[in-house]
Length: 166
Image 1 (cartoon, rainbow, N blue to C red):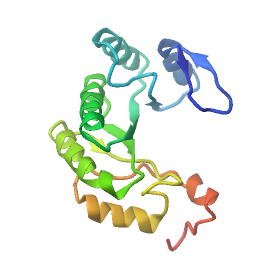
Image 2 (image 1 turned 30 degrees about the vertical axis):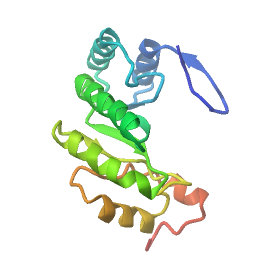
Image 3 (image 1 turned 90 degrees about the vertical axis):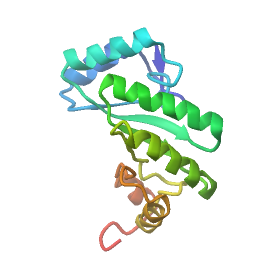
Image 4 (image 1 turned 30 degrees about the horizontal axis):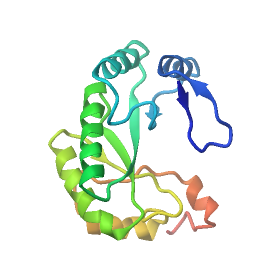
């Protein structure tokens, strides 16, 4: 069962039901989160998830991930990228909170590029990618072709940030 960790309105829904529910709501794609898919997801579950996505004609647009801050988290993210490729997802969405993480993200981007996967954190408050100017700085610092941004304008509104001319 998937329980949305830390969510205000927690719910439980197994991955099969989640994918079928998303399709019934006419979603064009889904994001999978930790607990639905993570580095420890067994091979048989990956096969099942991939098949469910195909059967329901519902691509996985992103796989959410945590911060890449050391060798252990880097190795876990590499496994997650391999899982993403296996189910047909070409976008992994890590979180970046500290500038010390940039070399690890660069290394992860290099690993992901060999697999045609994009690394794209979500524009999100309280991160290195929470405003347009900070995102532009981050793009320059990471300096990888497969590094991008999952743009979520609502987070700019939450910060009272200027959306136009930003």
